[in-house]
Image 1 (tube, helix red, strand yellow):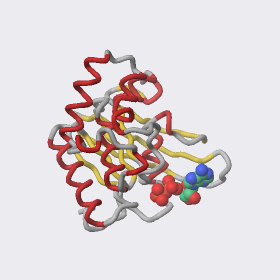
Image 2 (image 1 turned 45 degrees about the vertical axis):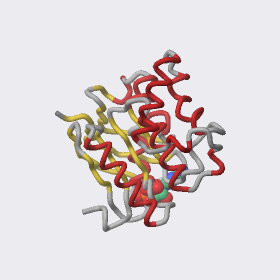
Image 3 (image 1 turned 180 degrees about the vertical axis):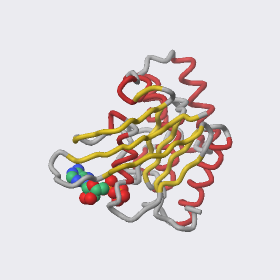
Image 4 (image 1 turned 120 degrees about the vertical axis):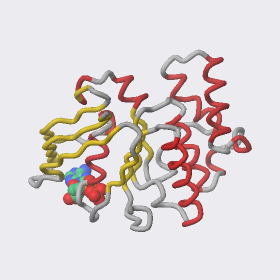
Length: 205
Ligand code: ADP
C-alpha cells in the first residue's frame, strides 16, 4: 500500500526564476526505506520539506503530493505535525528544550497527551534509543551523535507513520553516523516508513 506519492511535482522558490524541482514522480510503500540521492542543488531538501507542510518553503508548487491517503493540503495540522516526523542534518538546530527529558516530552505535551501516557511513551523511547543515561542531562552537554539520537527519539515518540531525514549523519563522525544509520534500520524494522537524503554512496546502495 502506498503511503506517499508525488506525481508531476514541480516547485519554484518565490525569489527564483528557475525550478528547484520539476516533473518529479515517485511513490513509497508503507514500511519501505527510501534513499534520495543526487547532486548538491538537485532539489532533495526542497522536496523533503514539501512533504512536511509546516517546514515547506514558500513558492509555487504544482503537481500532486499524497501522504497517508490524503492530499497534502487535506492533512490536519496535527496529522502533519505528529504523523510525519522530520530529522535535520544539524543536531544543534532542531532541539527546543534544555533537558533531554523535556525535549522528548515536548511534542506530546503540545498535542495534549495525558501525563501518564507521556511518561510511558518517553520511557519506552528512551529505552529503544539507549538514551536512558542521558535523560537528565542538558542537551548542550551532549555529543553530536547523542544530540541526533535525541532528535530522532523526539520525532519518533509521536509515533509517526513516515520519518523524513535530511542527511541525518552529514554532521557526524563516521562511527556516530553508522550508529545513527543502525537506529534508522531498527526503526524501519519496527514498521516506520523512512525517506532519507544521503550523500554517502556507501549507504545509498
Ligand atoms: P539539494 O538538497 O539537492 O542540495 P536544494 O533543495 O537545497 O538541493 O536546492 C535545490 C535548488 O533550489 C538549488 O538550486 C538551490 O540553490 C535552490 N534553493 C534552495 N533553497 C532556496 C531558497 N531558500 N531560495 C531560493 N532558492 C533556493
